[in-house]
Every structure is written in C-alpha cells, then in structure tokens.
Length: 165
Image (cartoon, rainbow, N blue to C red; front, side):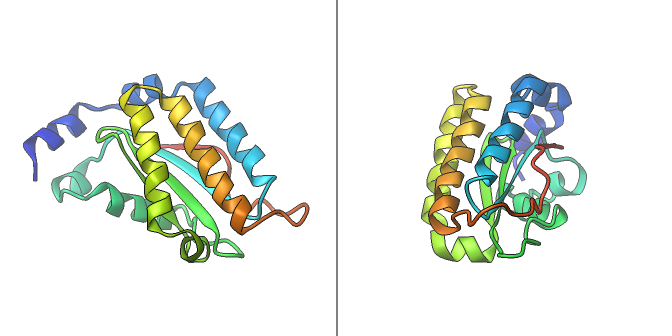
C-alpha cells in the first residue's frame, strides 16, 4: 500500500470530479453515447470515480479490480448479446480501464481496449477530460460498429447517462 496513493485519494473529492467533468461535459458524454448506440447493437456505460475510500483504498484495490466491481454492480454484463462495455476512470489515479462483456471482448481483445485506455489517459494527463472521454467513446464505437453493426431500431438496455461516483 502506497502512502502517496492513499494521500491522493484522501485529498480527492467531488469538487475535483465536477471541475474535470462539469455538467456540460457530462451532457456531451451522454449525447455521444446515445449517438454511438444508434450505430450498433452494443451498450456503453461511462463511469468516473473521484477516488477510492474505505476498504477498497486501504486494501490497495487496483483500478482494474475496481472497474470490474463497477461493471458487475451496474450490470453492464446484462445485455442480450453480451456486448456491454464499461469505460471507467479513476480520477485520483488518472487511470482508465475498459471492461467488456465476453461477447465483444472475445472479438476485440485486450490490446485494442488498452490502446483506447492509453489514448484517453494521455488526454487526461493534459487535463483534456471531455475530449479524452469523447475520443474513448468514439474509439469504442468503431469497435462495436465493426463487430455488432446496427440491424435497425433496438432497445436501449443500459442507461446512457454517465455515472459520477
């Protein structure tokens, strides 16, 4: 357990999240997800968490493990075609994780998801939070269009609104 990481998380608060992702940015992210899902059969969720607290923090939970927990809690796996994708940002660590359901993950693979995460993290390091989020959504959209193209109107299985934790 790193004292530096604990300090960053303890000093992070909702104000930092609101500063990085003001209401306008969250609205743009929601609109991007809606537009994306009109192009394919997949489902996208975007979550930004300011910092870990309590047990996850003091157990030194990794960003990946936390993203998997959030993926399960939000039931992103609960889609008809197993093609839900979670884009998760842990702001205190400036780390992005993409967790994808088994249907889409088996077609895309870890390297493609990691490339999207790396691109987003580069934007976030430059404090371009909205641009980084929208770029990540666009890149995930391209993979979903390639693997689950739209066959016409379909049911929106997951909420499009970003989750701020």
